[in-house]
Length: 351
Image (cartoon, rainbow, N blue to C red; front, side):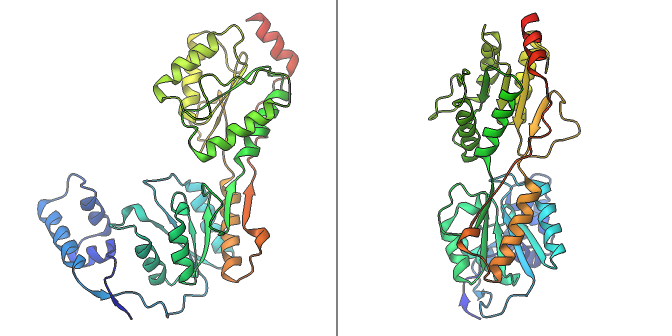
């Protein structure tokens, strides 16, 4: 055991203060409805532990044979519950125990704190969710501890670490091509954040698809270097749909934006999908209460989760080859409603 200042965890503070882990989290996040005496106990425990020298986990202790982890930060990036459930199920089917941890609840989220947690859990490897996956120094620190690392949807494939991701470029291309095959002559792509790596992938796929045919691929007020403000989405949608050469299909990069387009269409007397097809690319599985006029495609969460777990297990066994490092998974766009070209042209002429 090495005598170094140990990174204090929620469990450490909870144990010393005699309260639950959730109570510690609420105090550290300045949540209301915490008794003053309880808040004081937690704060005192944190101060004492912060100045106490304790033993760090011994890195010489061997990890458990079938223990792996998944780290995510719910404050920084949204991770689908479908992904978590699929990852847990896949690990269980392979006789592995997957320990999931939301580090947004930690008092400290340094690479040392994360490495210590992995050692304490005696993990053989760890999955890093967005945006933790974009910390090269953390990856290096974990690898130095002889931990296998697999990143989930990193913004860059650098760092020479295996990763899994949805093929957003291909999804944007296939979605646009399918709309073209359905008879759409003008297709718009709307986004309020082209700075997101995933959105740029969808947008690039859209552009590649529209450039292959003689249609108008105009992206209103969306130069590649800027993004629309969310407050401008309704104004933009209204301007698009009032145009004499209005689009017959609009691809939105999230569900809330698609609802605004639906509202704009209703205000202008346009029927969906008779006069307009509205698609959105969701970060979640389709919900039962979702507006059925919006056609949604979701990332392949289950396939990605299963692939990530399999890749991590292979990595713990030193069976990963260079060709395994980048694994991309395709979206399922087969559910998009079909409307034949003749019917669409007839409906637009009537309108």
